[in-house]
Amino acid sequence: MSDSEAERAERAAFILGLRRRGIRDLAVLRALELVPRALFVDPTLRRHAYEDVALPIACGQTMSQPSLVAIMTEALALNAEHTVLEIGTGSGYQAAVLSHLASQVVTMDRYRALVSEAQVRFKVLGLRNVAAFVGDGMAGLPGRGPYDRIMVTAATPEVPPVLVDQLKPGGILVAPIGEPQQVQTLRKFTKTPEGLAAADLMPVRFVPLISGVAVTS
Ligand code: SAH
Image (cartoon, rainbow, N blue to C red; front, side, top):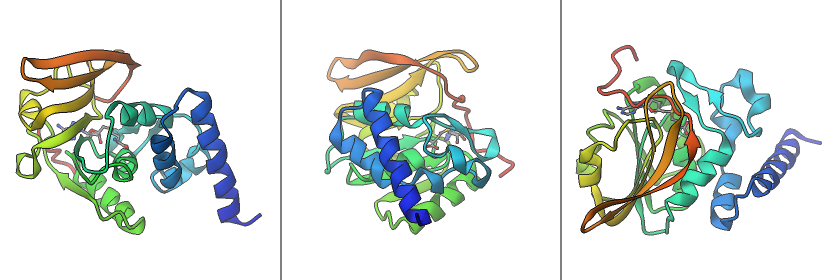
């Protein structure tokens, strides 16, 4: 079997595994099928690329396990007209998945090194509707908003109010809410005229949302 055939088989098994874990949204499954996770993981961890595990990435950060990426993507209830803001580019994997379901994806990270690597991956994959920026996600990116959807992929005790300002009325924001180094709750917020309506989805563990752009890289 050639490498690409082996990888195709691996990815087919990967999608079956996600279905078994309860991911039912066919558009979301298709989006995960379209993104080669192997391209986003450290080469030394390549053999784990299609396992349902979180993996360490550069700058001491972590990419989520694929079933959680799928659950968070499902929670955004995306359509092809949506503009999405992701806070926490990391490897770029989640943004690449979103790019197959939304019109535009804007993603930002406080580490320049992570953003640069993710930009290369988006280019290799020909994903023209993803734009990655270095910046403090706690301030969001008002110039590109307002957004139909916002996904925060780092833990925060509360949703930064500026992100709510950058969300369109009726928009959905998904974020892990809680203290760092503890179990957080993945929550889905809908922006209503009365404020945010919240629903708890599941317990999760994320690296923390840290204010300011990283100085080292
Ligand atoms: N979504 C990523 C994983 C994110 S890990 C993926 O698919 O690989 C969380 C990321 O949030 C880290 O890369 C971290 O640098 C970033 N982060 C933490 N605080 C931030 C902030 N204030 N602004 C932007 N990014 C932040």
